[in-house]
Amino acid sequence: MSRRWIHNLNRCADEYLDGIKDFIEFARRHNPGATRIRCPCRRCNNTLFESIETVGFHLVRNGMIETYSIWNLHGEQVDHASSSNALRVDNVEPIVDPNDQVMGIIQDAFPFASTNINQEGDDDVPTPIDSAEFEQYEKLLKNANQELYPGCESFSVLTAIVELMHGKIKYRMSNLCFDYFLGVFKRMLPTDNCLPKDHKHAQKVLHGLGLGYEKIHACKNNCMLFYKEHETLDTCPICNESRFKMTSQNRTTKIPQKVMRYLPLKPRLQRLYMSMHTATDMRWHKEKRVDDDVMRHPADGEAWKEFDRTFPEFAADPRNVRLGLATDGFNPYGVLNQHYSTWPIFAFPYNLPPWKCMKKEYMMMTVLITEDPGRSIDVYLRPVVD
Image (tube, rainbow, N blue to C red; front, top):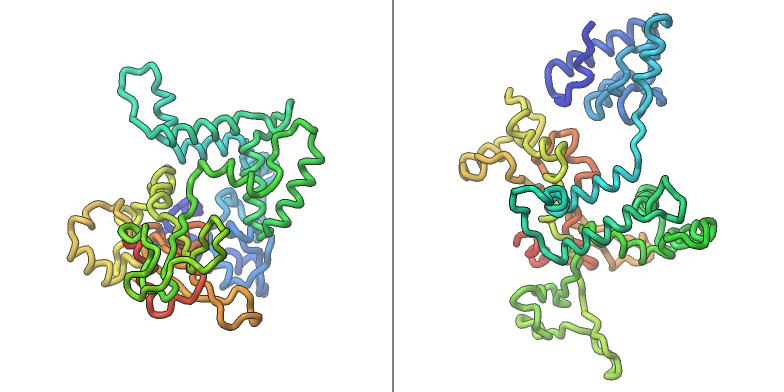
């Protein structure tokens, strides 16, 4: 039985779906009477037991472990003399140097800078880049090459910060908790270590990677944003409400009545095309989607097809991005404050295949409104529309 389907990236292909049916039949045949079997999807990794129907769903959604080509955990007999060594080799995950991963992140973030350096001495004219951008690139490169402490070969300063910040986000640590453990780690390391002392300083090191946010002042009554042509105004031209709160005359800084956070969308979309793998996935809807009148993806819907007929020039290039927007308010303080709500606005790149476009990794928060916008949410969407 051929098992090449396990490596098929298109989980909607007939070959892949038929392969799942073969696996389910194989599992039923070799585990008679069993209601739950090990799930070999990439997320469960053969460690969790699920119902046979759930296993089939997981294999479509998550894909099967690519190295699991001999189904020994589901009843297949293994010829140990001939295949034990192969199994042992196949099941070992490749060891990736975290420092190499960080250098890859920098090259993805600054492709023109790294290209210019690599092409020094070539006859080709290097791509001009902004001096401030190149300065950020040099700072990141310095931190990526600097040892965490003298003699440390496994972690650079940047690698250590990226690893720690990844753990903070993954396990939802608060800034205070992160500061505490960062201080503990710093005291554990040799005294001449270069680890930042707190979360604020760690963010400064990562600032060069971009993906920050902008603060835009808003009218207290949600009339408008103090943005672009209205950026210098101190009062709302619609309701004459002051832009800033009333404070003592001795205070040097002004406090705005209302602030929204805008996370620029364009750099995030550009990042999807900086990686070879996601750049290919962003063309999936045109180049790899199976068009058989079965609804598996927004591109199979009539709205998508009608848009293509209305704007043929936009539809001609599969790299053009189709976005979905979604928002909802929630109360971050539970029942403690019934009058406060926060409204995040997310964008979803529908170019990606169905098993990626709705994953958390590809959801992009574009706007964070810290108070209920009421019926004026279109006011806060202006930076996204622009």
